[in-house]
Amino acid sequence: MCLIALLVGAHPDTPLVVAANRDELLERESRDFGVLRAASPRLLGGQDARAGGTWLAIGEHGVIAGLTNRPQPGGMNPSKRSRGQLPLLMANQPTALEAVAAVASLTPAEFNPCYLVVADRTHAFYVDFAGGDPTPFALPTGLTVLENRPLGAPSAKVDAVKNALAHVGREPLATLAEPFTRMLRSHDVPPETAELEPWRPPATRAPCVHAGPYGTRSSTLVWLPNKPSDRPHVFVTNQAPCLERYVNQEALWLR
Image 1 (cartoon, helix red, strand yellow):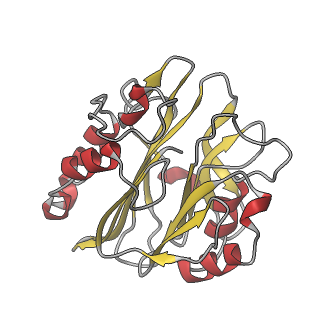
Image 2: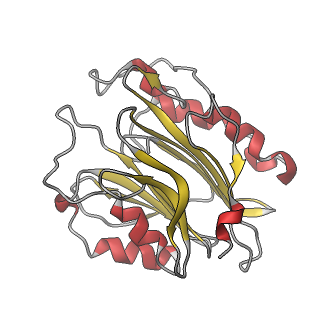
């Protein structure tokens, strides 16, 4: 996952919106969005066919957990544990508070580096899992955008996404998906005034990435109803969102 935007506690009709694009090598095999865990709490998400983890896990009770990778010039270390297991672990918890407690007991150095977010109806957190102290940071009310850099690091991509979603808290629920899906489909590459990773292709600064053998592989939009007993609303594309319409996945909640 290379881009996650969260709208936390800023809309009267939903406590949380999560919009995410997953970027990966095109040749890396993955399974389409589906049921990751059938037992309660039921978990939905896509699945990496090589390591078995996921980039975004959605729990039926409203715990949503995702990650963005920290790119490394030499690529991932195959001897380390799969970071794709972390969203599964977090979304399997009853609350976001318990989710961050679960990852706090782990050792980040045992995993390939990544950045985590987890949220439910009442709490949202960011955890730097790139080798340092995995102390959770509570996300503020409003819009948070995370790409493949630490939260708060200079990023033209993050700035552009925030500008594109500047007024989403004022959208009526009936049209709330439109600005998010428009952003997720965008190929606009913002200028980078201080490129921190020159080995990364410029195309990776667009929300929807097409960079040769690497690009956006799927896209997810989730929002939580205010009523805790109602399951998350989930819309997904199983390829780049510029190539496919979003499809309602809520039938997957049915046993």
